[in-house]
Amino acid sequence: MDDLQRRAGGDDALAAVLPVYGPGGTCLTDYGPDPVVAAGGAPRTAEQRQVEAIAACPPGPVLDTWLRGLDLSVLSPLILVEVAAAQNRMEAHQHARKLEVIAELANRPEMSPDWSPLAGAPPVQSSVAGDELSARLGWSRGAANKTVHRALVLDGMLTATGQALAAGHLDAAKAEALASELADVPWQVAHAVEDAVLPEADQCSVAEFRQRVAREVRLVDPDGAAGRHVRARSGRRVTHPRSRPHGMAAMWVVMAAEDATRVDGVLDHAARAAQAVGDGRTLDQLRADGLRDLVVGDVPPGDGPAVEVHLDPPAPVPSPRGEDDWLVTTTRRGPRPGRTAPRTTATLVPVDSPEPNAPGASAPAATAPLTPSNAEPAPRAPGPVESATPEPASLAPRGRRVQRPRARVAGPCGPQVRDARAGGTRSRRTRSRGT
Image (cartoon, rainbow, N blue to C red):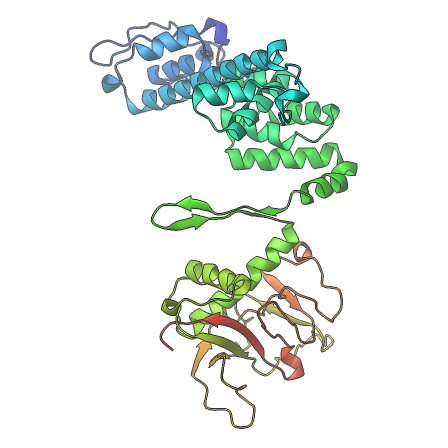
């Protein structure tokens, strides 16, 4: 791990000399001639050399003592930023030390006792180290067992990650992300991914680091992608509500990417259609209420009467390329130059009223034009569809949507969707205020 102790253009970490500051913030440390200038480089300022010395110091007792003795009120902003980075390295170092202690505890034979049948059901975990930590530190049993597992992984298969954490090269969040991403891969793949992502782990955020790890796993082990997807898909779930302040609750949904994309499309389309006809709720509120209506179907009185939003499609725009009539492509960015944007209207009809075009139907309750950004084709609704097999959502180009003719869709709450070119209407049951 010597490469993790060096910085570009700097000296070895072992030779770093931390600056000493006087009462007025003046640096009292003399660093002598600049070696960069001697090598033919551009001269550096005194603050730049101080920053380099602080960045080159590895976490440990020396850096910890220096940080504790600083007077932060006299330091310049540039030095304060580097002090914060040094403090972050110390936190990573201390976290690695804590995981090392937990791994040692879990490996002790006393933490894996023989379980007598007379004592009841055996524990789920073979080691009781998580139970001991939960009782002593006030952690939940799940969090304690997760920490024990991560400590054993960094002490075993992912030793290089544990060393990088102890050196302050990556923080606890990135170490946890790497351990979770490599939990179900062979050790050969895990070591290859470590070698690829660890050198630049300190140059990216946690989200970017996860993306790099996932990309390297696909490159190193492409043949195992199908098996990893099957194992991951078996963990799809919907959590139970978790309490939030002021009478609210939160739920978490984990499902396949294509299913999540379809659900998101249905909620987004219904929310935008309701806003187009004058619903005053925000998109987030409409999406939440739409999910509730699709699953439960109950409508609180404060959310207004139940209505159906009918999107009346405009006349089809002829295509100059001569494509087949069954293929219609729309672009969210607006019409191309030289074309007229089609005007789509939405009719809001109460649920108990007859269809707008049926004999004896009353006048539409409300009609409002949709802008091109809101006039998106309705995504496929969940439920059996008697049509050709839909293409995966991940294969569609970004910003474009391809729609094929479909028969009537019988969704869980009765939304009906027919193809616009077949002369039908699109209807999505949603809720609106004050109509």
